[in-house]
Image 1 (cartoon, rainbow, N blue to C red):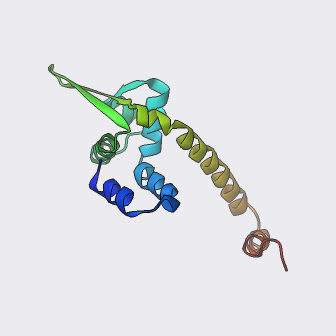
Image 2 (tube, helix red, strand yellow):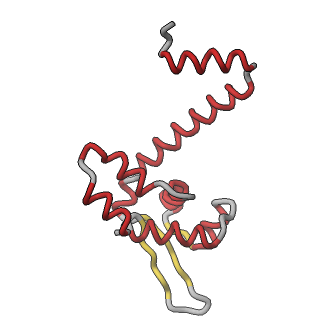
Image 3 (tube, rainbow, N blue to C red):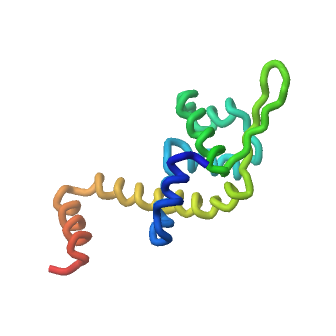
Length: 138
């Protein structure tokens, strides 16, 4: 477990379980990595990089290490030339699948709403923003 994750788990109360989830799953590419491994089963670094539209190697390496340190994925290194490394979900990582799916759905809904707002005239955006703030109350 990463030091950051361990600190959060030790110090935060049960009321903050959502924050623990966000701390573990938050980060560039993490939900996408988990989703791809859930879909494909086993992937190598280069395959992940291509499927993720090529994040920098440094960022992808860091995210994979954090997911491994937090126990969500496993990394298997084969002793051969050139080196072969495979990543797959752990049991714990498979358990995060429904959460990642829910985040994906909500993110799509949120993005669609924001696109509609951006396409709307400013007066409509202002009205809807005010309605969200006041809960429809005048």
